[in-house]
Length: 79
Image (cartoon, rainbow, N blue to C red; front, side):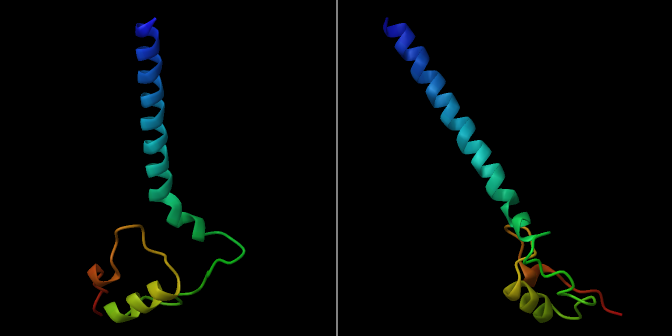
């Protein structure tokens, strides 16, 4: 009887781990929920930003970078 209970507990723990992993994956891609919606800011950036400060300003208005990305790490092309 105890073996069945232990197996059941293992199964429950495994399911909890799977649920946590699924939630982690969802959270990583949740930034995409800002896109393609009725409140989307399509056209927010009409041309390529010319400075890191400009990229940071756009990011403050509308979070378009993936999680963990920093606007300060993006170096605009110099023409």
